[in-house]
Length: 462
Image (cartoon, rainbow, N blue to C red; front, side):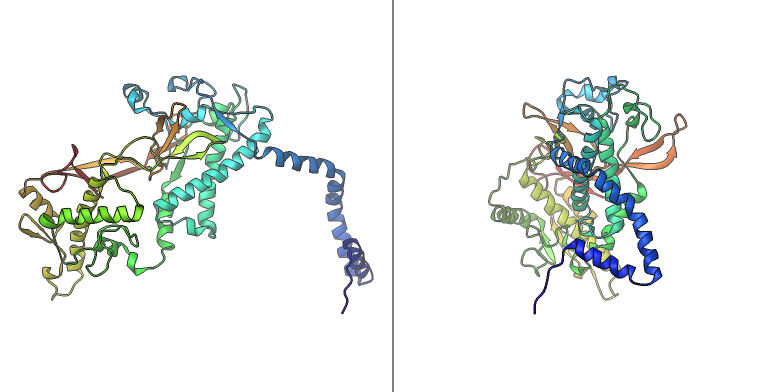
């Protein structure tokens, strides 16, 4: 069997002949298609050279857009009237001035220092800068929010609702940052929303915002895409004492008592034993372990070419407690959570169930089945316990810092900003508020809990 290759023009002519030789309706369809396609074909033929040149220009320049940070600019909050001063997540200037050792700047101050390395052809650069920022920020949001909400967003790349929510937010942020970097120095420029200057377009002090419903939708999304694994339900995690299902460094591996007691924990005699066992497991898994280490994981640059010096992380800050103290505090949290699970166990058990079936902690000779009993036993054994309600701003772990030329870091406080749906009477602009995160701080220091270091054991119930 042989086959002959037919060129595309020949095949096209054959198709046209078959249409012409057919019915009148085929001729009508052919005529209509010709009328519609003729302008497009003419345009492509007439401007084919210009189109090819434009494609080459895009390919040449799209990877060369570079932004630099000009630290000589006067970007303090007192220069807010300057057209190049971006106002975004601003800090109290008096607080910053009174704490110079804290090395802080606002996100708006950082953005005000950015400018294109090549200031020519700004309109062309703005298009691709915004597109690249859109991709970078979108990935950043997916990574950060996905990790925060138990990888709720990353598996949803195929769901339009999740993608559109993240894409819309990243697009808004990238557009904001692009305008901040490429703003004109004092030139009048009618913005998309009727603003007359570049500075006026970015004058909102809380520009990166989420509505409360959008935030709730992220949490609901996590519930909807849950794998349905019965071993990772909230009550199961409460029974195990911590949210580390499947993690080999969890205290209770849910292995029928091999890794952790299932019925009774003797705090007086077993606390240090299980802390030492966890230290050995950490050393075995990670290959190194310094019990006195207080360092955070190293910060990582977001994108040095477009956001120079901007890092995700805590810079050179250190934990308030050592790694060994952190392991000790984790163990106390596990015990308190397991005792909390007893409430659920007794409330949902049959009348034949008694406290004998509950998890117990022995402290100072007392058998505790509820968390308040353990706290009282710690007080009776010489521990100092302080409880204080505290509310701070939420940023869900998205800390930003700027690496300076002298290998030090300047820190950018961030928070999650929500829209209220209310407008200010002065200028009719939206009213925003910073999302709070509250809980009960529990500070304990004594012969067993919080026995080392200058700071007590700090845990939080929320």
